[in-house]
Image (cartoon, rainbow over all chains, first blue to last red):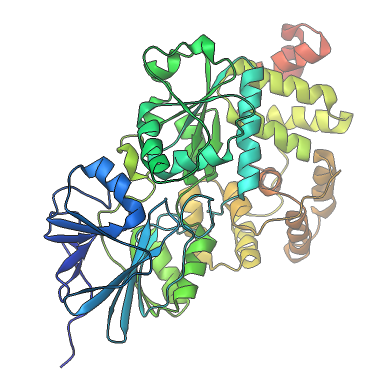
Length: 340
Length: 177
């Protein structure tokens, strides 16, 4: 008799019946393996959590006093009759893919991932498997990311141009991951970088674990705007145009997201400048990653799932859409800031 | 085409009237005569005739990018603009310096009388020489759907700034004919 599949998709989330655990579950479970600290993947209320060492500070920062076990990348752990192991996903610092194996049967759950190195996150590591669970946030061929140098030049050019035009550059980006990467692209020789509290809290957690980030100044109610004439403000997207930002005078608003690749989205958001920066793989990245796994079975969890699945099936893979409650990189303002 | 694309990007990047006018005025001041006239014509609604049908252009782009028709179609439905969809789908081009807006308009006029199967290599060849923004503008010239968010009023203000003439007189002349 054939054994049950190693992983199944349940209303609670991705489940391993034999190991008695779930991966990034969205309902409370006894034992959760977590790919990364974003709110749609690491939720409250699980009995016990297991994550990579490098994810621990952010998880504790977000979820408080949880029962958290950690593993190094590449360090196997037996749970029930199965072996689990974390491998870098390149999405944000501390993010992982999770490899689950039983005998010769290997599944990999990618969580969210990005294949181009960003200088901060542990670089994506392809893991061979028969079953690959992938995201497809940007699973359409129109999504192609510019290289780091180009984005850095655009960002710093905008910073200087805004100052020359008498405007304060305010850059909106989600705190965990995106804001950090922008810090590595900004040129501190232009001026100081002022940060919103939500951004600075995450920065502090990551600095504490040894990541090297440029100097930032946290904005407080006492901060005197005139004391930082050449400064750029880095804040969550919800702060663009807010009272917090207006305190600093006329602004030029920039927004960094993969969605900024599309002119319609840029115009709809009515920001002054859009920068194409994403923590997710672009079309070529998704296809490359799937090729590298050599998997014949691909489960597509969120994003342009229907189109991407059809494309994979056309290529001869056994691909299917798996409904999940993961958010990906959400374009909408209404989402909580950790979700993208 | 590089300068015209830069103008388009600047106009697109701001919602402020003063900045749009400044961008237009700066462009008009330094653009060569031919480009200046074509820019005026395009921005005041004198669009070139459609050279190739949208469906044909979409099919060529899919072929060039190695993508099936259905996926090009789905991409178009997400992006919402055909010229932009094509610009984003095609492999990165190698922008050629020194080929102006008027160069490409004359290029298109030169192939207008050809049958579609002879237009095709000319269009594919042009795509390879343009970056994504330049391609978007080029595609809009090809499909005859050139519309940019510049009102006649903005154009008049920019022209008045560059030429030192009265806005009212310029507006009258722009609208005439």
